[in-house]
Length: 353
Image (cartoon, rainbow, N blue to C red; front, side, top):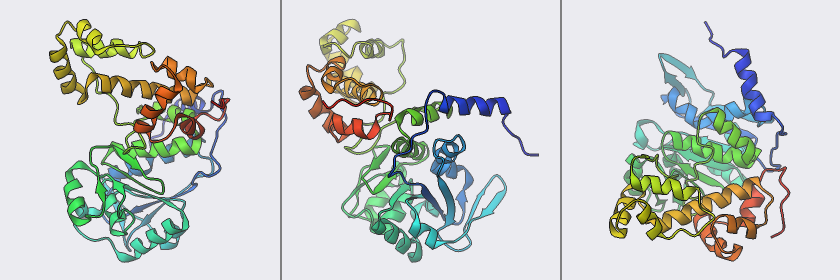
């Protein structure tokens, strides 16, 4: 018997997406999305590959989405939970797609992908399609030559193998995902969902993507790519830890100057011991972490407000836009104004400064 969510629940979720907002889709947003699977692909892994797109389309955020699953080889089937579902083998659909997602390659990338699907990927990318590899799917992009001399990531457990097999790829397994324009890659599991939400932000707007993430009980934005996006968010903090408490306190005061000595004093620790403990928690020095959080706050204000960049800079603890810009560009990869043009909600009036 098919189990369905109660109608009231589905209507409540739909209302959460559309209440007081129109659905916005960027004119250049990809609408023909193809997911390539190889024989034996796990049903559970597929949810990370296209689950966010499916749910976004269901609730009207991507009304024109054409999502198709095709095989990367004849006879491919998705399996899991005692089920086996064959998928069509259609290379022409791949060549005509706007966005192509390759979630994995069986046997942890131990074999070479079939040449016909590699040719189809090269043809689609050459035509202008964006191509995304998730987990060991990055190996498929590398085999097609799409990652030569480009940054890429994959699951940390197979990153060394990727480097060994494809030495031209600039592998960085430390990040969640990397958006390098027409080619994107992500680590395993939930990092694929993070990348999907990142793509949906560009397609439907930041506000709608954030509501979708909240409905899916996911972080609204886990930036993760090399240079283009800020590193993964702060870890979950233990409020009983004095250093963690000082971090929580600092997050409520990002608009003011906070010397590290003040944080150490609040934690009742020497500066040296505070620095050591702080690095254990975050992997970064306190000053680096503070700058990181100020830039994240600037991102949020650029997305959701019509404040001038100078005012946003001051609200985030920078003396001016000129002081904010180099930190923002270093961590996000673009200038604040450029970021606003890409990610601000369509309803926000955008100032010139």
